[in-house]
Image (cartoon, rainbow, N blue to C red; front, top):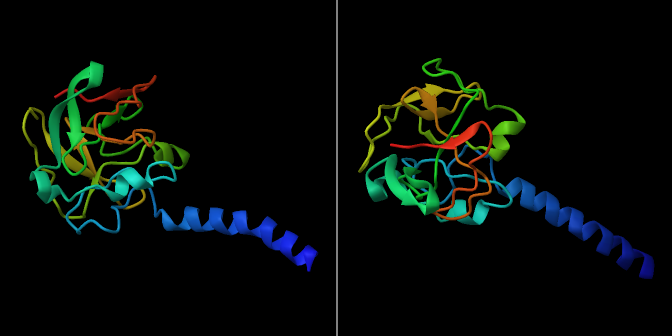
Length: 172
């Protein structure tokens, strides 16, 4: 009996880990609670709580809007959840392609809209919004020809933890 209890105690963390990994859905999909017109929020084990609170794009009426974010000033944020969006220096402007794939997209989830939906600009957005079709089939939002991304370690609106070499918060 003691051996079975030990085996059960050893297996339980593995079951919980697998459950946590499978319940979070892919990084580029919208939270399951959001309506079909929502903008994808960052999703990972670390950000699934923040992502589940994301509202639909209809809440603000815009896919992207400009807002003050901490010490970096006014930058673009997703209208659905207020999270800071970023560009990747390795993306080529107007190429119609994202250079962030495979392991990169896990840390830098794409800002997406449902196929066929047009992104809309909110207050303070002065550039051109459009979309590209990613290699994974998702429809990613672009700003002035560059794909937009979230950062998985941003946990709340106003976070800007994704300013790194090759990554920049987007100025309007």
